[in-house]
Image (tube, rainbow, N blue to C red; front, top):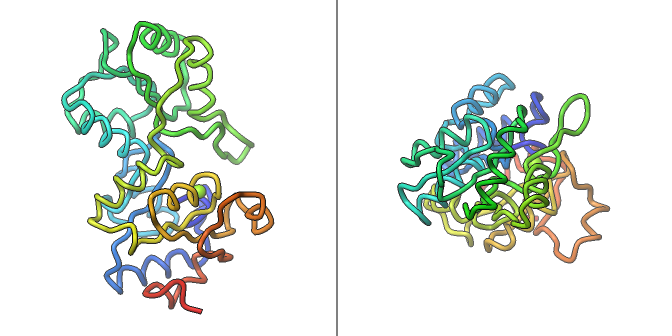
Amino acid sequence: MDGVLVHENHLVPGADQFLAELRDNDIPFLVLTNNSIYTARDLQARLKHTGLEIPVDSIWTSALATATFLNEQRPGGTAYVVGESGLTTALHEIGYILTDSDPDYVVLGETRTYSFEAITTAIRLVAAGARFIATNPDATGPSREGILPATGSVAALITQATGKKPYYVGKPNPLMMRSALRRIGAHSQSTVMIGDRMDTDVIAGLEAGMRTILVTTGISTPALVEQFPYRPTSILPSVAALVGKTKDPFAP
Ligand SMILES: [Mg+2]
């Protein structure tokens, strides 16, 4: 989502035409984000505000991927959550009970209101044996004023205190791609991952067996690509370059 379709609250020029063409050609798609703050419904409203009409069912967050993972691993379980409504709603929807009393998991997500008390509780529960899960490994997130500490940074704090590392479900874990593919009934061989980051989007798509397109409207630049031991299938200046080519994005 961010760096590909939108920049914060601004539309990437041509992203609306690109999505319209996917719809016109009946090409199934999901919009992915590692951010676990918002529910799909919240994100739909935010995207609509920037000028993109995207169905709720076409939005896939690291919070939804985490809930799907936990539902498969331990259905009907319990969790202590440090996070926002995107994560708590996703866990409630799979029938999880949120508790600080001997939970199966401590689940950490993105939040803007970290409390010393909540982190202390998380640390004590992880130290006592609760399994440690985090929605995404991003160390920082963007804001207009500069970088913000993100889930990976708070996870590091809990790891330092307990000696336990979390299992991250979001990108670059290809698990997030596989759950997304299942969600739209797609096969990796006939699916393309479009992203703006080599270290999360491209590697996750690659490891899930998909072809990948790096767009340079976000974090990674063409020069940066050469520093990685892997490459995307192709590099484009923007999703706008895919307008008119959605049926065969790799045609010369
Ligand atoms: Mg991005």
